[in-house]
Length: 145
Length: 143
Image (cartoon, rainbow over all chains, first blue to last red; front, side):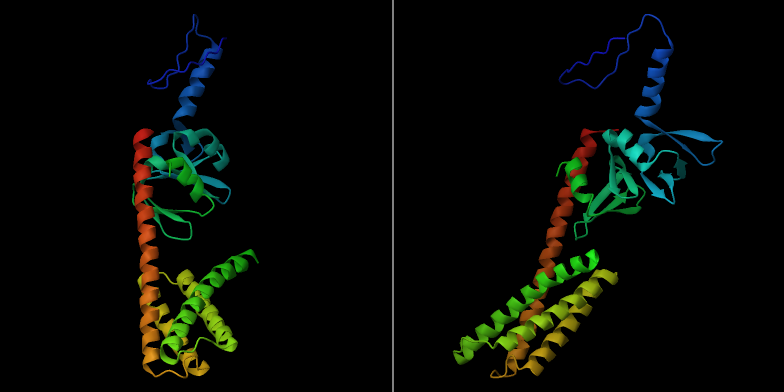
């Protein structure tokens, strides 16, 4: 299979797969793109897996060796670690704000500098979380300040 | 140990600022009232010690008490009492009349309020910049 990457100014990012026959390799790539790009697999009980749209997640917290995914109305668990989530979704606006938390920047309502290099984040559901002084400069760089 | 070190670093910087402020005030009043351009080394050391104690109380108050405005008022009252009583006991203004103590209070309160007001203003300006950048980030990289 040939892989070609082309740069084009002023166009939306697009992946085009050309094939003359659908095979396992193509299906595997399609499945990877669909499940990995903008979705995350979560659960409340392990026999009931849910595929959640990534933009619905407010923040993700690691506690007692478990990873919890918070949306506006619900809390789920995921088998991914914070490190894996950060690696997969950092390009989609996910940013580490402390040792145990990753936040979805697109679900942030407001920011407030509370001194001592820490930033208070108000999420869209009015919950407040803190960006620690270690991660505040990284967060500032991501949002372009 | 690292936490203690960080704690002491913050106190040290502020203590020096307060010491310089008080020394400036004493020097200025000595010059104006007695044309005296010297301050005793013991007075300087006392001022630094009192400043250090006041800053320690300040750091503890701001760290453990929640309501910021109430903390500022409590700390200002405590600091005023500590500085006034130290100035009286240590005889920092011994050749000067009583109104010098009143001037010290006014000088101290106004100075402190300006410091906190300006710090607050800086934080607000930075918060505005943060929110502006956040909005442009969210517009640029819509999910």
